[in-house]
Length: 124
Image 1 (cartoon, rainbow, N blue to C red):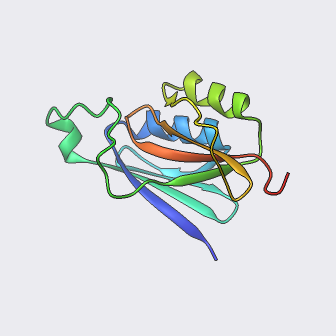
Image 2 (image 1 turned 90 degrees about the vertical axis):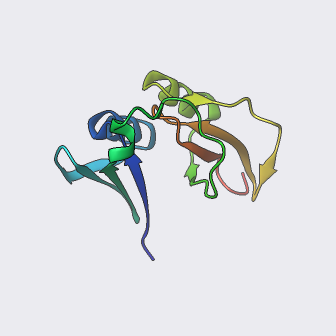
């Protein structure tokens, strides 16, 4: 089964670079209003939003949302954390919490969208 996620963005290019760099996604197509990034069975669609053009501060972490995307990564925490910081995001301090055999923490992208990281090889 393929899965996907749609994120509304004020800067398609900046957010595409962020997700491609952090999660090794490939940009398949796009223009000034959208971008399609793919990695394995996952598709990320970035869509331009009018709200961001009207002065909403999209660069602060927005914790009051009903959904939190989760990204599973099989690289050390330090590596994924550095990738996120290099492209303008931030990682919240890990809370010594594991779930499903992976270390869990939250982070946000360069536009303030919160996501969860599950780091490590399951069972390892």
